[in-house]
Length: 50
Image 1 (cartoon, helix red, strand yellow):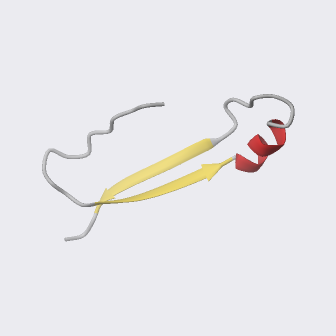
Image 2: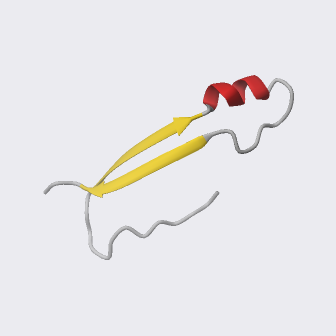
Image 3: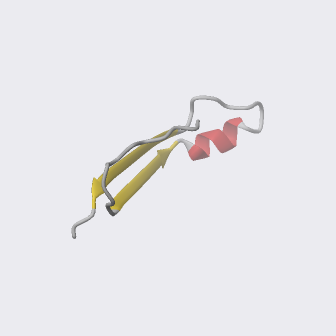
């Protein structure tokens, strides 16, 4: 999915944390078919301390 996320109108440094769940299940299901909707992602952004 191509998505643009606008975080700020000014120059800023951001920290990011990404969590993924379901990759093992995808690997298992991929042996039989193309799995869809199994992996879930959580992406968190917050302004870095200056």
